[in-house]
Image (cartoon, rainbow, N blue to C red; front, side, top):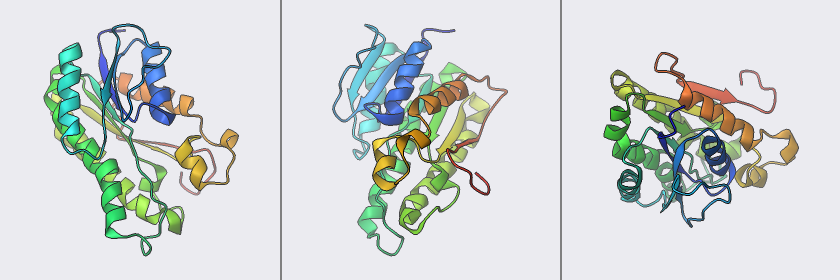
Length: 232
C-alpha cells in the first residue's frame, strides 16, 4: 500500500463523505477534506489530514481547494465528489432556481473539481474519480424525486464523460449510484428506518475498493440498493 496517495473528498463532514474519509484514512490514504465548516476528525493522524473550507456553490472554490491540497501534499491521486443537494419537488413544482441549484452542486461542481485536479490525476498514472450519483440517476423512483433525478442523470453522464476523457492518461472515473443510505438527506425524505437503509460505512468500503482497483479493472458505474427493485 502506497501511504503517500492523496484523495480529495467533498462534503466530508458527515454521512457518506465522513464515513469514506474514515475508511480511507484507515487504509493508509492521505486526505484533503472539503467542508463548509472545517473540523478535524477525532481519528485524524497528524500531518495526514488537510482541511479546506469548501462550498460547492462557489465557482472558484474547486481550483482554490486543489491548489491548497497540492501545496500541502504535492500530489493528488483521487477525488471523491460527494457533496450533494436534493430539493424534493416534482418537475412541475420546481422552479428554475431549484434546478439550477441542484445542477450547481451535483453536476457543475464535480466537473470543476475534476478539471482543476486533472493534470495531477494524470501525473499519478492511475488517477481516480468517483462521482456520488444515485439510483435516482438510473430511474425516477417517484414524482417528488423527479427534479433531483434530472441532476443525478447528468451526474452519471459526467462520470462517463470523465472516464472517456481520461482513459488514455490512466484516469478512471466511476459513478457510484446508491439507493437509500442512512444519512440525514435520505432520512428526511423517506419513512424507511435507518437500519433498513445502506450503512454509509458499507458504501465507504465500496468506494475504497473502486479507487484501489488497477487500471485494467475499470468500473464505469456501481449501483447499490437496500431494497428489491425490478432492475436495481
